[in-house]
Image (cartoon, helix red, strand yellow):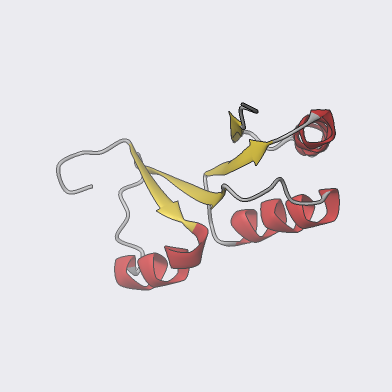
Amino acid sequence: MESGADYIDVELKAVEEFNNSMRGKKPVKCKLIVSSHNYQCTPSIEDLGNLVAAIQASGADIVKIATIVVDITDVARVFQISVHSQCQQLEHFGFYVLQLQHV
């Protein structure tokens, strides 16, 4: 950030420590991406909703969730929470989805 980064990506599990270390020193133009990565499964709709809420509450400018999809039901959950988040007018929200290949 000192070198003029526009974005910084911090894992949700580490964001409290990051915020404490910054103590309001984050440059205004630097956007905070708070992310959560789950490469084991796609969480339930309820868990995804809670995850989005926790990321928002952490002070994120941008919500980022990375997950893996195994079948169409996983895709449906990702789509449903994406639509719900757009309805709540989250300005910056994104999913990074990995597809598990069956061999």
